[in-house]
Amino acid sequence: MSRLFNPTTAIITWMSNPALPSLVWQIYDYSLEPFGSFFGVQKASEPVHIMMTQDDFKIMLVNHTPAPLKNMKYRVRILNLDGSVKYDETAAIPAAPASGALELRTLPPPAGLSAVHFVKLELTDPNGKLVSDNFYWKETAQDDLTALDTIPDVELEGRVTRRDAGGNCLLDVTLTNPTGNIAVMAHLQLRNQRTNRRVLPVYYSENYVSLLPGESRTIAIEAALEDLGGARPLVVVDGWNVAAKAMDFPGNGGAQIATNDNARVLRARARN
Image 1 (spheres, rainbow, N blue to C red):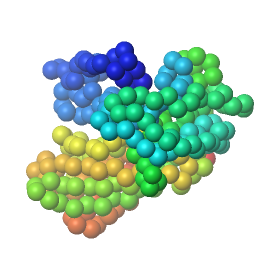
Image 2 (tube, helix red, strand yellow; image 1 turned 180 degrees about the vertical axis):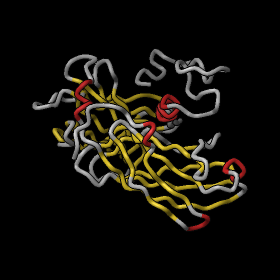
Image 3 (cartoon, rainbow, N blue to C red; image 1 turned 60 degrees about the vertical axis):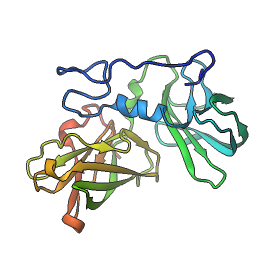
């Protein structure tokens, strides 16, 4: 991405999915469950994209569109495992070329970073609307992410709004992090409330999202009503250090949200 058209002109991803059960080299599995890699590819393929290079930690604005961008702004934050902000900068981008990648700056190395820390990038348009965002883990000792075991658990608050149209069940799921800690890789999965079985295929607007303290994110989910078999939808939530407060939403046929306890990461958990 950061080498867009110079020297790279194309990238081929192999493979999209396997014919048999497998856990490697794919973006969705044989049962049509999208993996984290699917949403990574989706994020990287957005028309206007803010990113950090992994080899030299440069902040880049990638513009896939045929028109130049003007009067954009970017924000970069570096946060420790405890949620404290060690660096926060907002800067203007007067112009960015069409069909190219623009280097904005190199990530600074502030003092007092935890062994694993996080980088949050945001790009906004002239009206302040979020255009692109990105979230990275970064370690002070190469390839040592064991400090992630010490991050406190986070119970997210969720709200589900349901409407049905065109034979589909349409859900807007808003996740909010009410704590002072970072929620890492919150993952949603749609299930049949009656049987607790997965509903497949399902469209998620995004997934595996990380939420800073006080941050909210709304994810759209779409599935065929036929695949729900007349049952209410159940949205289950898991993640690295993530749980969700169980709630029932009776409107428009009803929906529920709860923690997916069977998918929670087993680790030495630090409690709030």
